[in-house]
Amino acid sequence: MTRFLTLLNKEITELMRNGKLIWLPVVLMIIGISQPLTSYYMPQILDMAGNLPEGASITIPTPTGEEVLSGALSQYGTIGTLLFALATMNVIAQERQNGSITLVMVRPVNEWQYLGSKTVAQLALLLLSLILSYCLTWYYTNLLFTPVDWKVMLSSLVMYCFWVLFVVCVTIFVGTIIRQSSAIAGVSLLFLALISLLTTLLPKFMEWSPGNIRGEATKLLVEQQWTESAWTVIGSTATLSLLLFLAGVMVMKRYRRY
Amino acid sequence: MLVNIDNLSKQFKEKRAVSNLSFSINEGSCIALLGPNGAGKTTTLQMLARLLTPDSGAIQFKGYAEKDYRPLIGFLPQHPSFFNWMTAKEFLTFAGKLSSIPNAQLQARVQETLTFVSLEEAMNKRIGGFSGGMKQRLGLAQALLHKPKLLILDEPVSALDPKGRRDFLYLIEELKQDMTVLFSTHILHDAEQICDEVLILQDGCLKWKGSLPSLRKEFDLLPIKVQTEEPMNGVIEQLEIIEDYEYIDAKTVKVRLPEHVHHNELLQELINRNISVTHFEIMQDSLEDAYMKVVRQ
Image (cartoon, rainbow over all chains, first blue to last red; front, side, top):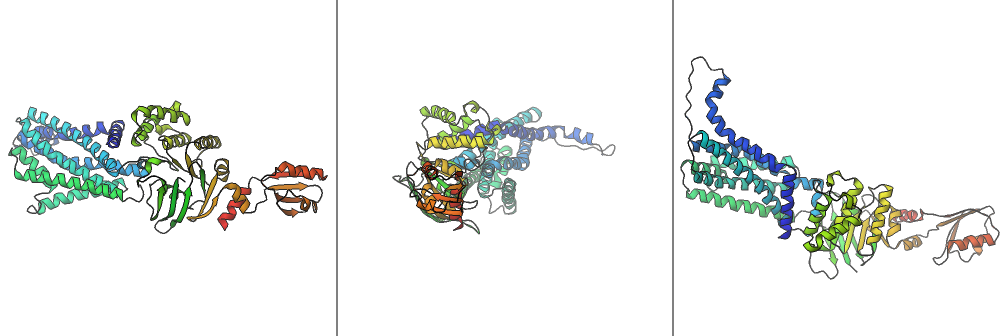
């Protein structure tokens, strides 16, 4: 356990020193608050963009606060996921490429301690960014649109955190197999996209799919109730993430060369 | 005996890097692993450090039941790379914690090790700004931090300038008293200076093993070269102190003396016989000759 904490401490210090702990929350906050801001100023934006014939009138219904928040969730689902995968792709590949992993693995460190420290540190970073960004978005939504109850906001946030967990576990697992960081991001994103695609194509068979998380989170916002399907998705995502982590440990144990 | 290595083999895609390597390391010895580039030295050391899984064979530390013997070894890779954002002190503290050095002793031990490799002035600087020699010394520091039984060094001096090399060899010389040292090199002179035993590898096979004097002896080397003004025919044959000799021409001869005879005695004998010596040389490259003979076998 001490070794795990030592490694975790090193990971967190690294995140602070290389500035990831600053830029990732900032970028995610910008992505988040752009949603309520663009929704609010949409008529003006269209007006400024011009190109509309004289006398044309467009009426855009003002969205509710819940709709704006679910719009933000959909931003996290696309640009956010890309960012998550890009932020995570390097954590193992870099140390394998420059060889600094050898000076760690030459000491009595277990594979699960190594991988666990990476996963936990990365989760901490991404979840912190997500929470900051989502809370800020919620604040702006309340200012500009109809207020959203904090409990509703929180439950959709908790739901969405499982998607981050899944993204991190997928990317780290792929990172144990592939050495090239760009390929790691590519393969992980392809896999995540495939899961989302299958979820929309085969809704009957994919009720458990982590691809449903955003839908469930939106449902929590709009309908404001925890349904049984929410629990199914949470359960299956947590299990899948655990399995991916264990698979990553197995892959590392079978490394013939670090 | 400290470690027994039995029948170690490793195959990379096309190439057999190490094949059926067996040897043992005695406690307290200093062993050099010699061999040309690509002979399998690094592969062997990496397998010993458990960074590479052998295809077959076993490595057994005497009196250590657990399979994972990593607490017993310290390893310095050929090109050590660190976390460049850390300072030297932070890195050693990190490494020490991973090796379970008790917290109470950790700071003192880090300090002591940094002083030993003379990095105490740079200990609060980022490793990213270190020179090659400083990194190498920090690499040595992390390898010996937890007082391992076996210190494995992969080409520890090949990347250093002459002064750095001398300092580094001096450090190893000092470490020899406390731990068993195994290092690879392709510079024979370094091996000669500090180690008691050599292993010569070629194409993944162990070609020769033993002490350096016995290497000289086995390959029948004549390390003293004498040149005189007068022809020496008949004189050399009479000298009882000479073990073996070989004429290059009538005035030049290469000889070997038994171990208990000092080379001055030969000079004395020649002068006593009124022979004017114009050249008397103890050839340093004799070891190289022996090495070449082993490798060409």
